[in-house]
Image (cartoon, rainbow, N blue to C red):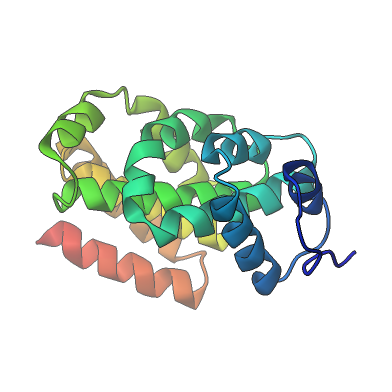
Length: 196
């Protein structure tokens, strides 16, 4: 179903469009429509946790593109994404959420956010995030992109949590033996960072 070029798309039609197969061009068009119609990004987050696999995936894909275009948006929604991540079972949504969370935490670690947001973020209960990232990192059936994003999140959290920095190298070494060449390259990079 190709509805991309229908003028005067209303909100209902736009959200309905998320149910159908999309290309990157479709996603970018929807992102633009979301902005023009000033629709609530929180609604996309809610749609991303839908039980409808394709609908949730498309919603998360659009959400990622909206937030990546303005990194401050990631800051605003980071606590909500962190809170929801352990509840996600859809592999595609996991990929988009973990990517956004890794970028958001990187912004916190490298002090690209306000001091007040940094304090607020580190005051959050991050244990559920740590737990789910460790689980996804070691599970054999975790998709490679999610595994890499989980590793990046754990590394970034290790800058504040020494116990993660201590545990992570051995787990990375074990995972490198059973993973793809692309994953091994990223894992070696993280190991070098942990040693420094």
